[in-house]
Each structure stands twice: as C-alpha cells, then as structure tokens.
Image (tube, rainbow, N blue to C red):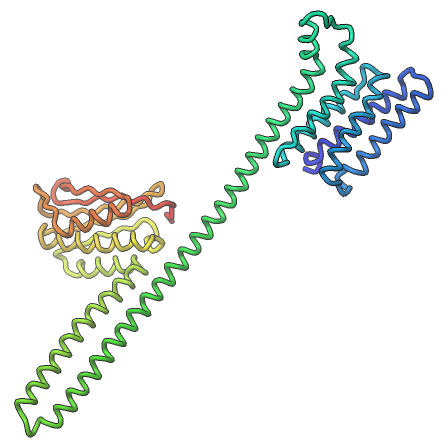
Length: 398
C-alpha cells in the first residue's frame, strides 16, 4: 500500500538512477560528463528531499515551478545523449502532472502546455530539422512526430484514468456519507416515534386527569347542594340528581373514548401482543378459531403499517363472524424482498357480489396511502380472502 501510494516517486527515482548510470558509461568529454552527472544527481537529490514519502512536500506552486525547472535542465542531457532513458522519466513526470491536474479545481491546464513546449524544444525539434518544410507534408510529419504522439497519449490516457478513479472515489465517499445519513435518519426516526408515543400517552393522561377532575368537582358541588335541600325540597333534589346522572354519563363516555385511545396507542407499540389478544379473544370457544402466523418481528414496522394491520384484522375478523359465519380465520404476515404480504382468509360464505362497505373502503384507503395493493376475492374452496402487499423499504425478517 505504501509503494502504491508513492509509485510515481519511486518510478521517477529509478529512472534518474538509470540515467546517472547511462551518463557514467557514455563516451563523453570529461567536463560534459561531469556537468550532466551534476544535473542528474541534483535532480535525484531534489526528488528525494522534496517528494519522498518521508519528506514534507512543498506547496503546489513550488511543485509546479520545480517541474518546469526540471524539464529545462534535464533537457540538456537529452542534447548530448540522443537515445537516453531520460525520456521514461519525462513520461512518468507527465503522469504525475496528470494526477496533479485531476486533483486541482479549477484545472491548471497551462502546466501541461508549458511542459510540452519545453519537451517539444528538446525532443521533437532536434529530430525534425531534416523534414521538408517547403511542403505541407513536413508540417504534418512534425505534428504527428512519434515524440508528440507519445507525450499527449501518455497525458490524456493518464488523465482520463486518474479522473475516473477520482470520480469513483468521490462516489464511494458520497455513498458512505449517504449510508451514514440514512442510519442517522433511521435512528432519529426511531427516537421520534418513541417520543411521539410518550407524548401521546402524556396527552391522554392529561386529558384523563382534566376530564375526571372537572367532572368530579362538578359532581361534588351537586352532592353538596343535594345535601342542603334533600329534606326540604324534594323537587329540587330530583333536579340535582338528574344533573348529577348527566355528569356521570358524560364522564363515562369521555372515559371510554380516552381508554380506547390509550388502548390503541398501546396496541400500536406492541402489535404482536395486540394481535395475540385479538386471536385469543375469538378462539376462546371452539366455534371459531383464528390461525395467526407472523414470520417476522411486526413490532419493528412503522406505526402507520401497524395501524393498517391491526384495524384490518379487526375488520376482517368481525365480518368473517358476522357476515361470513366462518369457523376458521387464517391471518399470515410475511416479509419478502422488502415487501410485506398480508393474507387474510376464512372458510365462511362466498362473497359473490362484493359491496364496498365503510370497512372495505377504509382498508383500501389505508393501503393506497402506503403505496400498497389490496385484492378482495373468494377463497378456495369456500369463503372470502383479502390479499395486501405493502412496500416496507428494508428486510427485517428474523
């Protein structure tokens, strides 16, 4: 991994070491050989000091200017050694430039252009002096010179490849960030549901306290008044008693509604227990049996899906007994490929002409609200069935 991250530096270093060896064995005048060796050794040391994995890399501007300087002074070696391994160093440096270009925003296109001008002066022009420039063919040959093609093909292929890698890395990073955000949203959603449930219970408890407190105080006042007139004014006493009965009746209605609301909130919190209670309440006698099967943890479902399941079970069981005269009611809940299937069936009377009652319309409305599908049909060999599919979003099968 260390070599992979610093492959450009190592390849440039190996190329320069080969160039130094090349100069050492090449047949040159001693002063020229010393000059070329000095240039090659200087660039090698500069590479090690500035760009090695263990050094503190210079600023982008310094790196850019250093690349121009290196292109120029190494070109001197190319003048004296025509077929030098130095060209490999240039190509590796071109790849490094492509990598640098990809990482910058906006793209510094001038860097590769300046490098090409220097490269063109040292590598292309000396090899193109004998071309016939009196004809357009000579200029075409200059443009399509092998060194030109090699330079630009090296740059563009490297740029496209490195740019693709950068885009893929950016996409991977965004995907990881998105996954983290989704996990956070799911965590926040769970906390919000829990807080909503707590707030709902507190609200119901407060309503219960306010309603009973007000009713009991009113009843106490009426009883005090009754105590004062019960022996002297029978007619007034009956009026007070009638008002007291009205207060009690009204309080019972409000209490029943509040208890039902609290019961529904509890049922949605622990749907599995609520469904078991529905089953046991019906299966207490041998006349009707409810076969309930849940193949995953229904308590992990969203509260709106829980509401659909519970109310649909209530409606289906009631209709199966009241209208279908069923002796067996089957309810199955499955989760397959992030889609919940909810199948209810009975062995009662066939529904030849299905009339959309308030119950059926309520089921349809709740299913459509959750982007699901519902189908009502006859059960085989007899009876009635309801098939519901709901997209859940994630597989929570045990």
